[in-house]
Structure formats: C-alpha cells, structure tokens
Amino acid sequence: MTQEDWNLSHIPDQTGRVAVVTGSTSGTGFEAARVLAARGATVVLACRNLPKAEAAVQRIQAAHPASRVEVQALDLASLASVRAAAAAIRERFDRLDLLFNNAGVMVPPYGKTEDGFELQIGTNHFGPFALTGLLLERLLATQGSRVVTMSSIGHRMGHIYADDLHFDGGYRAWPAYGQSKLANLLFTYELQRRLKAAGATTCSVAAHPGWARTELQRHAEQTWWAPWLRRSGLLKGLEALFSQDAFGGAQPLLRAATDPAVTGGEYFGPWGFQEMKGAPVQVRSNALSHDEGLQRWMWRRSEQSTGVAYPI
Image 1 (cartoon, rainbow, N blue to C red):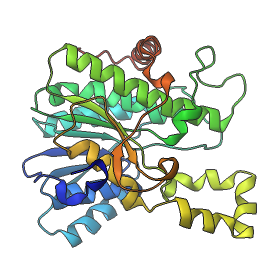
Image 2: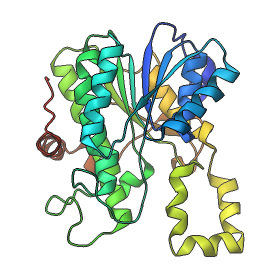
Image 3: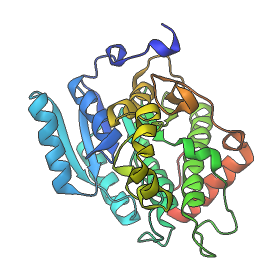
Image 4: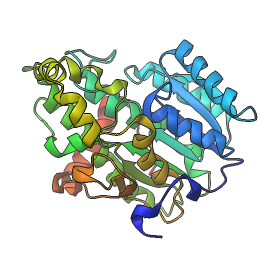
C-alpha cells in the first residue's frame, strides 16, 4: 500500500476500544466519531453544546443501531469544565485508547476564556493541553493508546508571541489562530518525546483537515474579502477546486488514530495541492514546529498557565 492508497477499509476493528472526541457535534469530529462507532468503539462525544451532542448521538445510532455513543459536557474555554470532564471520564472508564483533541475555533472576534486566555490559544491549545494531562493516567494504562491533536495548514503562518501570548497589546485574529495551531504541533512533538523517554506505549500524533468545509469557517467568512469572493462566485469555484467536505477532512484524523504503522510524532494531512484536499498521507510541518527549545518553552508555559503537570 502506498501512502495515497489508505482508506477507511484499512481501519482495524475497534471493538472494546474507548475513544473521546472533542468538538464532535458536527464537522470532522462528528465524522471521526461516526466512523469509529461504526467500527465498534465506544465513543464519547465531548462537547459544549449538549442538545447538539445528543442530536449527534441520535444520528450515529440511527445509522448504526448497535453503536455505543455517549455524551460528556466539555467547554475547552474553561479549565474548571476541563477538570470536571476529565474526572467524569476517569470515573466512567478504566481505559482510554484514543483521545482526539479535535475541537477548536478559528479567527473569532476578540475574546478571553473563563481563565483569561486569548480565546483561540485558550480553546485550541491550553484546554486540550489540560485535558490530555488530566487523562494521561488512563492513556498510559492502555496499551497502544494515542493522543491525536488537530492542527492546521495555518500553523505555517504561526509564531509564538512569547511577550504577548494573549494579544493584550492588540488583537490580530489570523496571527492568533496561527499561533494556536503552531502550539498544537509543539505540544504533539514534545509530548511524543516525553512518552518515548518514559518507555510508554502511548504515542502522540497530529493531523490537519486541509481546507474542509465545516462550521469552523464561519468567522473566516466574516472577514472583509469573503463577501466579495462570494458575490463574485469565486469562492464557490475555489471551494470546488481546492476544498473537501467534513468527511474528507476527517480522514487524516482517522488515519493518525488507527493506522497500525504509526509510531508517534507523525503529522497527517491531505496529499493534494498545498495539502488542501485528497487522501490522507504523512506530511511535514514547518521548521519552527520542530524547534525543541520552543517546544520545551511552550510546555513549561502551558503547565504554569493551566496548573496541570504531566507525570512524564
């Protein structure tokens, strides 16, 4: 099998496995949850909007009546919610095979999380960092478990603004988004290095969906150029050429989670032009994401900011 030949038929049976998927009421998270449930996994939809989560459960179970799908309240913009969700998951399950750090926000208006973090780095990085650390005991106790973190093509424009991580000096939506997605990769690689040093069978991998047409795009469509592109018809044409639906965007996430060849530290995305759409393959992240000094700095800052210290 070449890299480009991977498809859903290559996903092994997931019976007996437990997967937690954040941001799974729609988009790539829902598609990943649906596929895993169909393959036999017990899937926990960890979401902020509980009515939407319950509706997602019904959609999955209507298509797969024997599936085991549960809901867990989780707001990644609140460390108190993250702690409560992690405690509930630890109470309900004595194993955790897959943790999908999938949920995120993209270029919203300026805002702060409950804990005072800039909204994008708080939701996209600090929340998942805390959740993973609080669930690590279950992951380490489960042979071959994986942490799969969703990054983005946008990490390429990312920079860590160490002196103004929360954009208190003036908010810029796209740089803040790029920073959060770069942080996802710094976290993925540093976590993998620590897991390997500890001799753990758990591994850390990352993925990105390319240009996937999901609700994540809603704020981007409010930027100054989007209405012009839509009125001119160019946006529809660009989407037809370069984008894919949520199901396509979920493929790199699913491959990262289930491909038996994965050993840790890999990054998966679409194989097509500029990695915007296509079959899921292993791709390269930018040089900054591999800066080990920056990885360690971001890790220390994350532990300090969240109050979550990892046991590895």
